[in-house]
Amino acid sequence: MADKQSQTYFLYKAAKVKNDQGKFSSGVVTYKSKDLETWEGPYTVFVTPPDNWIRGVIWAPEVHHYKGRYYLFATLNSSIPWKKNQEGWPEYNFRGTQIFHADSPMGPFLPFEDKLPHTPIDRMALDGTLWEENGKPYMIYCHEWVQIKDGSMVLVELEPDLSRPKGEHVTLFYASSANWSTGQKKPNGDTAYVTDGCFVYRTKTGKLLMLWSSFKNDSYAIGIAESATGKLTGPWKQQPDLLFGQNSGHGMLFETFDGRLMLTFHGPNSPSGKERAQIFEMEDTGNTLVLKKRVL
Image (tube, rainbow, N blue to C red; front, side, top):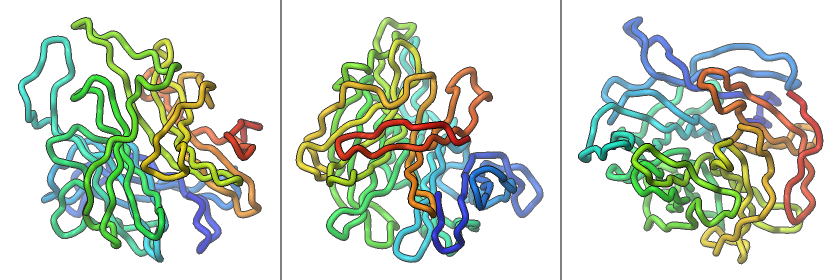
């Protein structure tokens, strides 16, 4: 995140952190930089509350500055099953995106009063992100393949303070709608289509794009969807060419303080534990996005 108020770049990462009792808990840390080259940290910005709805491993933390406050979108996991398992298929455990709030990009980020997810509790959901349209805040999130086989992108309106969802959950598209998304064969013979890492961006000509990740021939990749109407409700069509296809994904965009457009994502996606942040300078052509050069 490029924070204009402090003229500082922040990079957020899920981590094990110490709580008030000195015990390790799931949480989020940040690194900060003035130039995208030299980084300081990590600094703890979020510790999962002991009375939160679930308190397991965190995925995909991202922070947005919105109407004077900072909001952490984080996917929380649990080992609590909610549906009978299928042979050769991952367990159906509670998982969802929850939004936390703070007055500073350094936190501490706190839950809203109910300490519940912003995604439906009976959905395996992840990777929520923020977008504003016509003065209203929305969250776009992924309804996971583990539950529905063909993962989808879903839209829901949020309360003005982002405290909870207020509208219907609307499916925007499925992972299999992209020709490049070839799916993954699972041990039970089913093919799963992954939706991960959504991020919305409006080009200089007004086109509304969505970056998202899935797999092409078992390699993690970033593709681009385009709204035919320029609105969040779409309909969405998939651009044929990948933005990045080298076992990396979950892309997000930001603008530097001197006006350059940047893409950040993690790679390689596998093996687990080898992921590192990468940053590329981008070109907004008006119709799509193009990689220019690697910065980090």
